[in-house]
Image (cartoon, rainbow, N blue to C red; front, side, top):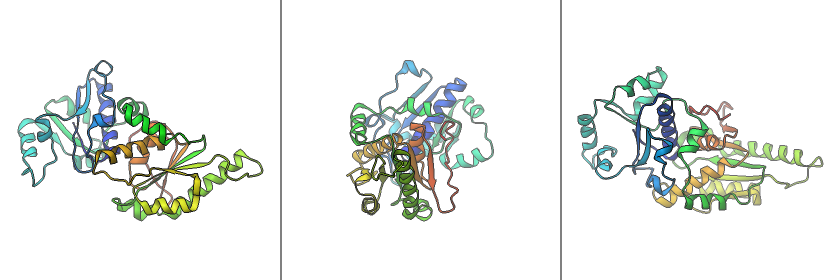
Length: 298
């Protein structure tokens, strides 16, 4: 299996593969490749899996010839990886097919049992749990240090806010910042009312803001001042440092008490699954849903 897409999508696919392997006894080799949107290796973010803990399941970086065989087919590589894949594997499912297969109730377990299978995916294909996600994705020592630093000022009443902007049109259209203002204002009022019958201002409620947009950071700071905790780095997926900071953001969100996320993005739902905490998708029609097969996140 080849992981595709951004950080959240890769994590959900790997969790689905691990859940199926654990349940069915089917061996899985899951490979992490560097490509557009993910210019970072697995081992630069996470600890390696111990073979003894998952003898049927491997999750690692592609290496050697695998980096070409499982590269995304493009004009630059003359689409040769896809030709080589079709020569090597008898049964192949590519990422765009999975939405339709999920809709139609496809039997993935029977398909994998055929052998000679290859799947590339950015969408999960079977139910998995928060425990599966936490087992697979344990930050390495350097990233864990950054997470601990980022969350040092958190309180039991820290709220998580993920506002996706620059590259996600659905989030821009359906999750305007005004709706986040409404949600966060209400959360702060409820928190302060619970902490102090007299409504003492500024008692404990802080906001962790994860966003890819500097103007959004400035607008949130103007409104909430010192309540805001956020990264000082400019968001980017074009470097190892940028991806590492995104992972720190995800785990910081997972340590809050409630996440407010943007429509259409898997980033904050994955954070909610990691922390097994409530999430509200902020959306114009008020009917935001979480498009994940995680079984344990409310």
